[in-house]
Image 1 (cartoon, one colour):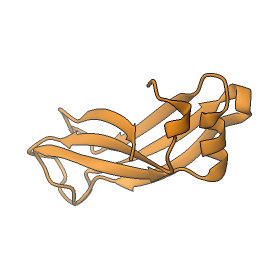
Image 2 (cartoon, helix red, strand yellow):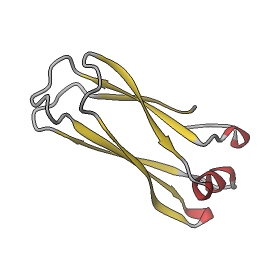
Image 3 (cartoon, one colour):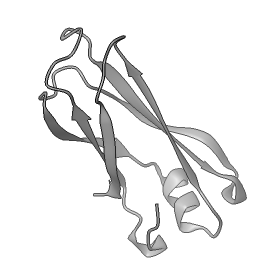
Length: 104
């Protein structure tokens, strides 16, 4: 993801498409995000967890993750950063799409 360092906001958005049918409507899954900025001394910092259960099926939804001051400072510093996105979904879930990682 390329961004202007001055545009780092306090909320990160991630679009997730859930298929129109899921194997277990009582637990669809969850998404976790982590940040690593080696030059800033930030390694695998958790950015939060969002549940997928209850989101509309067959469309994109935006998940929101709040960045703390340390994560924002690391993203504004010089050097490369990496995002890790962990998906934990019910067995048999297909056609889940993640897209549009952005600052809100």
